[in-house]
Image 1: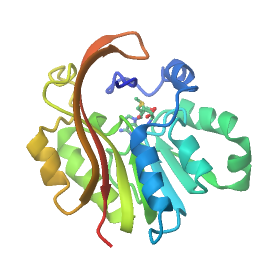
Image 2: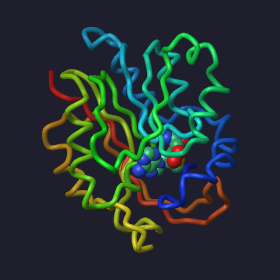
Image 3: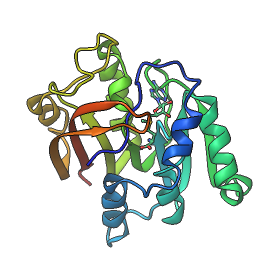
Image 4: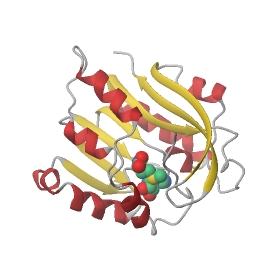
Length: 213
Ligand SMILES: C[S@@+](CC[C@H](N)C(=O)[O-])C[C@H]1O[C@@H](n2cnc3c(N)ncnc32)[C@H](O)[C@@H]1O
């Protein structure tokens, strides 16, 4: 059951309430699945990870617990404030870095990473920018590393809202992952209420995919 849900094209301000609402929720299965695989030898040592659209740090928590250095990226300033308050030790040690950036604007310049995580955020990238974003992700993941995240399908309640979300049907997701080794690839359709209290039909792809070594 999904429990996330941005008004994805919403202005960067206004996320603080969402981050508070989701602060106690456990990391998502996608990031946990990727981390479990990374811990299994002979996988790469979990060193550098990237958390795109990190929000309040729901998945960042799992990445830090696993021993990763984390570059957390979000366009909302509130995300940086939330991370700083939630993970003071990692922040002070420099093991957690926040970059305020719009991942759809190009020139992301990601570090080489054993895991690029993107929980419930990539669909907010406009369609004409998605290819560049996906290339940046694919380039950043080291051979043997992983991508973990979510995409929305055509039956999603937000698919026809006209706010320039990128929507993928199953074939398009498969094409995206053609050069990857899927570890988790689940399609889910369900009705639920978002953390903002909006009733919604979800059509989600839950994805963990490995870059061949
Ligand atoms: C639904 S929240 C998910 C937060 C977190 N990843 C999670 O799984 O709980 C989406 C997050 O993505 C961020 N976001 C959306 N579009 C973005 C963009 N183009 N660039 C950077 N961050 C973005 C939002 O600011 C928000 O914090």
